[in-house]
Length: 110
Image (cartoon, rainbow, N blue to C red):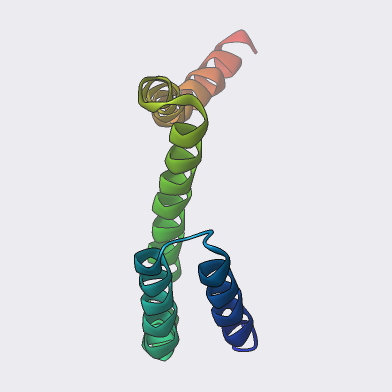
């Protein structure tokens, strides 16, 4: 998030609090998260710069699946999300074996 967005978010939180859209505890939790993010961003940036590429890709994969699970749980519920993500992970884990099987079968036919 750019540094210029912080005042805009704080003003938006104040306006939402004045209009009664969100409660005071929610405003303080969002404000605390923003302050924590602003204070820790240089350290997190240096940490991610020092990590190897394969670990960054693994972290991105985990974050992506977590975000997908959150969105699907919000839209479809816990049971449907569990079923869909189980099927997706099974397809991902069996993909290398399917490709290997196709390569072996392709050599036998030739």
